[in-house]
Image (cartoon, rainbow over all chains, first blue to last red; front, side, top):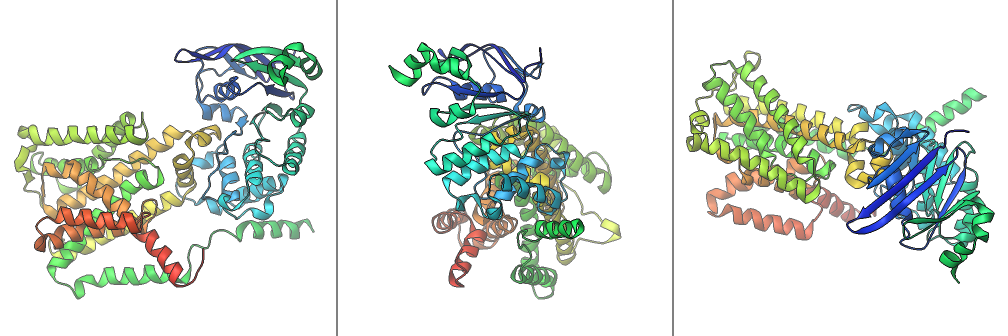
Length: 247
Length: 334
């Protein structure tokens, strides 16, 4: 059996007395498309934050490609091939789109320690950043500041910044949140076009769109895994209806 | 064919980088540079000395601005590095019996090492916590300078230091010391400008705006901040050396919260996160302190009023604020 790209074993996280993650165990295979669903407050984003290292769990283990990363600081996990997007758009607003993407490229290069040469003079990074912006159809806005573009376009920059890093495991936190129907199709096609060697774990509320993208689904409720398995089995499960789809 | 394409992409890649060196900007640099150089030719000693003090305060404010403006780390203890460097230089020269070169090198090196240690402690926090820790650390130094009389001479301060003779040049006159300070200022300004424009500088600004995202992108946010803290401490030490050579004297007040606050005020009044801002802010503070205090007894109150005026009408600081007004009057739009 292959080593899972992402393995979570018996994870617990308490905020004070409040358990946000309870005995969560999830295993995601390389190249898998995993959807994480659950009502508001189910602990989905908290789970992401523990995978990226923004919070450390109270107990349990997180492994990336078989290596334990439970207490590793976030930037080291990025260098192991982990990238994420944020539910609340987290971009560098005063800077141009190309600068945003370039920061994504810079993060994994030793150039980031160069204290002499201006970032804007690295033509190769600029070319690559514009190519990545092209993937999300925003290359024509490359030199505009983030404040100039629409909400839907910002969502695409969020994803582009993660894609620029050529991640092995990509965590998408509600990539469709707040988008119009048309924009949603754009982003859906974008997620569908991510190369198969990338493992994608996605939190999403929009079931219609998200279920199409997912092969496996995990349902969280009050920080616990309620149902976990192949797409069809989870959708058909009685508990899914109870917890999530309602009645 | 592929060659043509490659050139095209390269041109496209290089072309639309920010238009930094507009003729106006170059003209501003040239004129202010010429004025600065020629100042002693048409000015008396009082103003030349004031200008030297402004240059020293400007190096100090620029170094603090690396933390405040580019790193988003407001420090209320930056005078530690100016004062410590000044004390080191004065002490090793007058009490330690060392020559100028050795005492100056010890001052720069020693202060930078202390900045490294302070950074380890202060950067456990950011925001208000960082501010309070830097304040506490600087108060410790201030207390030591005041109370450890056997070493620091306490409230009497350390005197007896002479000015060095860099490359055999005599800098005891007002003019020559001014030119010496101007050279050091120019070097400091350029090196700090290069630092902020560099790839590392871009990463630093990233950690100011979105520290979480920067960590997720692979940047070691803590280390970036620590390196900047040490670098800022080094330039604070350079300002301290000039400061103690100018006054030939050092007193614990140079380590006080007032000294740190004046630096912070200069940065914010002039425009934090810009290169010109701290220089203008430092000039403003020093002019009020040295000039206005001759006419107005409570010059601190005047400083407060000016600061209030700036915060109300140009909250982003004098330099960015003036640029904004200039663009509005010349109809530049955005």
